[in-house]
Length: 325
Image: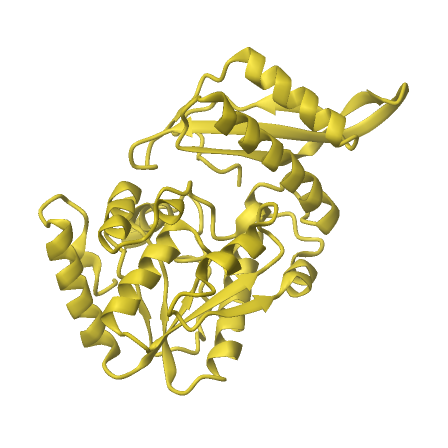
C-alpha cells in the first residue's frame, strides 16, 4: 500500500490542501535523498515532475526514455518542452533496446511487463551515474491502481506504473504523489502548479506507448505505419471541431484483402477510437460524423498503401477498455 493512499481524491481536500499535504509526505519519505522520475511528457508525469520539483528542488532528476513506441515526432516535442526547465533532464534513445526485447512477443501482458521492466532497468542504469539517487517517482493515478488489481481485486490489465515492476527493483522506495487522484484532478493540480495548457490538457497516452495499440508482435515497420495513421486521424479530428477526451488509431493483428494499384493486396487494418469520459474509469464512444470517418479512411489508405481496411470502434467502457490491449 502506498503511503499516499490516504490522499485519495474523494473531494474532501482542496487542491491547495492536497498539494501541501503531499509535499509534506514527499519530504518525509525522501529526506535528503535524490529522486529519479520517468518523464514521458504526458499529463501525469509532467504534473508529478512539477510537484516534485517544488517539494525537493534541485534533487529531482527526470529521465526521458524514447523507447521507439511514441507517436509521430513526439520524442523531439517532449525534449523541446522540457529542455529549458529546471528538472535535470536526461534524454535516452532506447528504441533498439526496447524493440529487441519485444521481438516475437505477442501476448499483451507480456509486452507490458517487458516494457515496465526495461524502463526500470534504464532508470537503474542512469541513476547509478547520479549521487544518492535512491528513490523512483511515478505518476501513478487512481485509475492505474484500480485497473491493475490493487487491494486484492482482479486486474483489468497490468500497468507499467503498477504491475510491471520487477521484484528486485534497485531503489529504496517508490514516490507516487498522484496516487489518489483522477485525471481531471491531476490536470487541475497541474494548472495550480503553473504548468502550461499544452501539458495539462494533453490527452492521455499509455505508459507502454504504441505497443498496446500495435496488436500482435511490435516491429518498427508496423509502428511507423501506426504513427502515420494516428497523426492523420488526430489532425482531422482536431480540425473538425468534434470534441473527444481521447482519440487514437490502433493497428490490428487481423489483415484484410484490398486493391492497391489495381492489384489484390493483403494489408493491415487500422481501427480508430474516440471516447468521451469524465474520469476514464468509464467512457462512451464518440459518434463521429460519417463524413469525417470517410475522409480519414481515404487519407490513411492513400498515404499508407500497406493499410487496406479502416474501422471505427463503437465500444463503450465497460465492456471494453479505452486501449485495445
